Length: 253
Image (cartoon, rainbow, N blue to C red; front, side):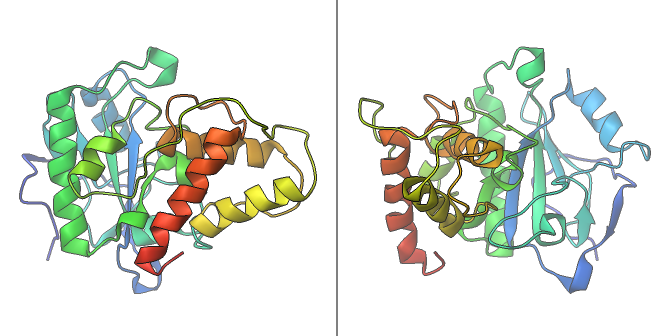
């Protein structure tokens, strides 16, 4: 029996699906933007066998919800990715594509009507699959080297106010020391350790390398959106501390 959302208004099934590996059940929700000019083109691409991509749901600019893959099945939305040591994110997640042209095509704001639909869909998916707030993530969280979506304009605070996802109030940007590309030492190790503890797929090597820079940027895109530059300033580090402390109540971190 097909598992679907009752609030989806349209069904356009993608051929780019397969069984979830190892009979895994969805325990993670990954949010993307389409990065395409309009929803029609995005749907066409997600249904093209040559694209090798798909998603469970797409939310268009007017708030219309299209289901494209049965929740029982493995959609191809996350690609090479990692979270909490799990490297087959597609097999344990639901993927939602949100229509937005993305950074290469002007990156407009997400319309209010669209965001309200995203909230409603996320509530439905999270409740039905018992997905913890710590596992509602951005595409950029699980693959920071390759992706930056849904980006700094996406309203994670709106989702959090509606009981979706994990968030804390970010520390205001100010002075203080910072870490950046090329730095080495115990401070970098500590930063990498905190990012890894939260869930990011990062190696603790004591070098502020390309992966560390991209991971810090991914963290900022989700949790400190005012400035996502990949530099671990005091605001970033304090916000990360705060996030880990808040996560402890879920007994997962």
